[in-house]
Image 1 (tube, rainbow, N blue to C red):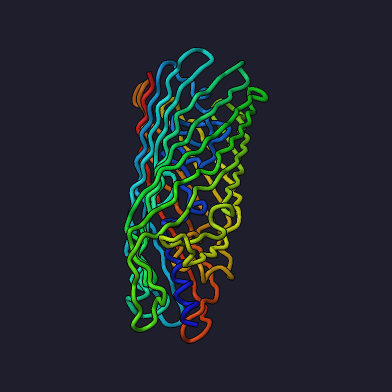
Image 2 (image 1 turned 30 degrees about the vertical axis):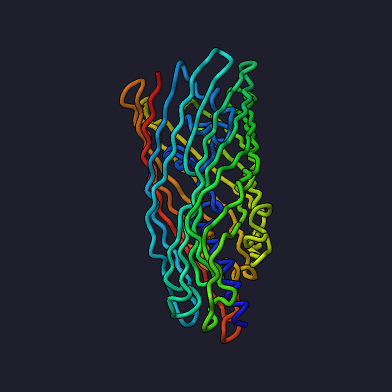
Length: 404
């Protein structure tokens, strides 16, 4: 029974590294205030230069006359807890920064170049205990994925824009549990994206994009592993341990409707391929032997986003959105996902954009991720015990936009 317990803690630690704060799985809703205010519904009608991260065709759809630049800075506050009949513990890490930026340059009437960068997934968690009232069950982890996307967009005619981008990534990870200690390290990854936007009529446009799975190089940790876990007298074995954790693919489709010149409504559907990267992973020692099998059990996630924006005046635009994605953690998988905060499903967003001149805009947005929990049985020294994972979050973003 104790062996099952430490295996659960092992699985927990890795998922915490992948799930610092739940939005859509471990993916952020966006990189900037405008994107968050639209709930991530930007595939068919992009809002800014960093939109090329999610649809490369966006670069040719922003009406950039020469060059456009956007910078987004966010403050994220997350409440996360683990509880059972004996304990309830909160994560000590609650505040994080989000950053996204992008630039688009018009090369010709048909060609645009863009470059976007930002943190698209990750962050961290710090639990002093998880399944029992002892520090030996603490879980402290961090993970972050930074992406850079150089992009080309081409407009063969007034109705169609197509785009392609390379996506370069750098993902960091650290894990410290009763089972093992793996100091922070980072590895590079590579992927790509394609996208298109088509104007069906002056009032309707559609968009689609596909972002490939990002192949992250295998992590190498100079750490230690405890074969007996929480058992008395256990000995940690120092050495080099390896682990794979790639970033999921995504496919998205959106429809934008402009019933008037002031009002725009967009509905998007996005599919994340979590089953390919979070279903089951393996921790190996320096010989390549598997020391732990981590059965996270994640399935692919379908996300629905509805965004609305309205131009109150030529200098003032307001936005609101709803975003929903069912959590990838089922009750039977809770034992392998202790401490994961990927339980939030519903998000509401609002935002306001002020134009200070023909070239300069600022945007503020606020998003609330509503509290949600998942409960399932977890093996402990006293037998199977019901555990609940719970999380909620608040996100505020500021954005500076400049056009020339």
